[in-house]
Amino acid sequence: MNPWLIHLPLAYLLGSIPFGYLLVRVFRHEDVRAVGSGNIGATNVARAGGKGLGVLTLLLDLTKGLVAVILAFKSAAHFAPWLAEGPFLAHLQGFDLAAAAAVAAVVGHVFPVWLGFRGGKGVATALGVFIALVPPISLCIVAVFAIVFLLTRFVSLASIIAAASLPIFGFLFVHAPDRAVTFCFFFIPLLIIAKHHANISRLLAGAEPRFGGNSAPKAAA
Image (cartoon, rainbow, N blue to C red; front, side, top):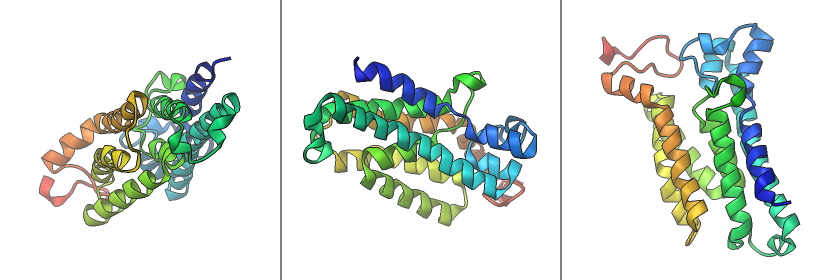
C-alpha cells in the first residue's frame, strides 16, 4: 500500500489529539476553551491549570509532531530500503513524505476533528515536526523564540518571529528542496502566524498581556 495514503491521515490524527483540552478536563474538570484566550495550547493551559499542566501540554504537543514525522521516515525506509543508507536529507522521496506528514500533523493540531476543527496555534507541534525533520532548524527557531521572549516577555511575538524565521533556516540547511518540502517550509509558518491574528491586533494596540502578567502592558492604558 502507498505509504502516503497511510501516513498523511495518521499524521493528521496524531496531530489532532487535543492534549491541552484533555489534561485540563481530567485534572481541573474544566473546558480550557472557556478560559483565558480559549486556546488549547500550552500557554493557555498554564493559565487555566497551572504551569505543570502547561509544560506537560507543551511536551505532548511536541511529541505528537515528532512521532508523526519519525513514523513517516521509518515507513519510507521500509518501502524503499535504500533510503536508510547515507544522510537522510539526500533522499528526497523519504524527505517528501516526512515533510508532508509534518504539514498534516500541524494541520491536525490547528484543526482537530475531535473539537469541531477548532484547535491550537501549532507552535509546539511545529517544533516537534522540525526536531524530527531537520534538527538544526528546530535549534535555530528555539533560539530566536528564546531571544525575543526574554527581551519582550510576549509568547505570541516570540512565536510569530520564530515562525517567520523558519523558511530562512529551512533553505539554509536543506539545499534545493523540491515542491513538497518548500511547501512545508512556507505553509507551517504562515498557518502559525495566521492563527496569531488576534495576538497581532493586540500587539499593535499595546493590549497584549505579557507572560506571567495578569493584565495588558502599561502602554495599553
